[in-house]
Each structure stands twice: as structure tokens, then as C-alpha cells.
Image 1: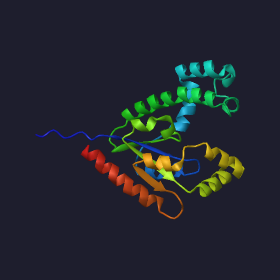
Image 2: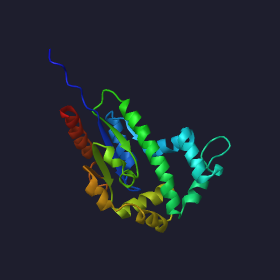
Image 3: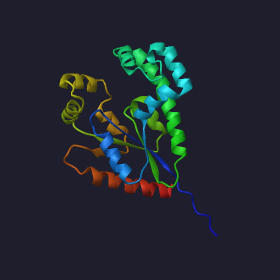
Image 4: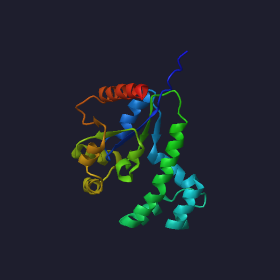
Length: 207
């Protein structure tokens, strides 16, 4: 009897700028039965529970980075790294590798699926996209993204524009992506996700 070929579970990354609608797109993939690794949420958990990472953070940021109960003092950390690019770079150099290792363990534990999906805001900036089989970027026009963030966070439009100006240009993200999902309110997200899903399922079966 011919031995059945083992299905390869692809590692797919999903990213997009602030206000692009990454979480909404992930909900569609989740409805198709695809497991989602939320890197930003998981990073916050690891920063408070991974012993090696906690020690590194205390060494970099000082003991005030944590409350007495061991939880993160996010306001203190944000204030400390705000405007200090070197401190932020050092912080990311600690957190990003820890998240990458954690997501790799998570992916390896998945069974019976064509691919897993890892959502992260700084995929290209961190270089972690190189570990993915395929990359998806969620794209929306800048003004629409600003409007969404202002509504969501009750932020000042100019403050949002300033934050967006510090992010990697959208054109660069699109250039590095295998797939682009346009979340501009004009095209069906479901149809776009279904088309990508079918391609990824077929690719996993032929790999």
C-alpha cells in the first residue's frame, strides 16, 4: 500500500498598519477553522510570565516595569520608551525573539489543518516575516485608517497621523507580501479571504 503523504501545515503571517482592520480579517479566517496566534496579546502575556524575558526586562527597564503582583506596568514602560528610539529598539530586541519562539512552539502543536495564521503588527519591521511560508497584508487608505483609529481610541487625528508617519510605508509592506486584502469598504472581505484560503489549502496539499 502506498504511504499517504503527510500534509504540510503552512506558516502564514498576517499584518497591516494601524487601523487597517487586521483583527476583523482574522475573525473571518477563524470562522473557516484556522487557528490564530495573536502576537501582540501573547507578547504582553510573555512579558509578565516568561522568566527569562521578565529578567531581561527588569535589567533593561528597572524594577518599576512591574507591579508587586508581577503584572506589567504598561504606563511606566510606555513613558520610558516614548521618544527614546534606542530604548525601544532594545525592548523589541528582547520581546520579538521570545514571541517568535513561542509562536513556533504553538505552530508545531497544531494538527489537522492546512495552515496556521500569526497576526502581528510589526512583522516586517522585526524581520520575523522571513520565518513565514506566506505573508498577507491588510491594506486600507490612510485617511480611512485615521478615521477608524480616532473612532476606536477617541484619539486626536493629528496624533494618529504622527504615529502612522513612524510606521513602515505601506508600499514597502505590499511589496514584501504574497497576498493583499483590501479593507476599504468597497471590496468584500469574505470573498478575498476565501480566495486566499483556497490557495493556501491547495498549496499545503501540494507541498
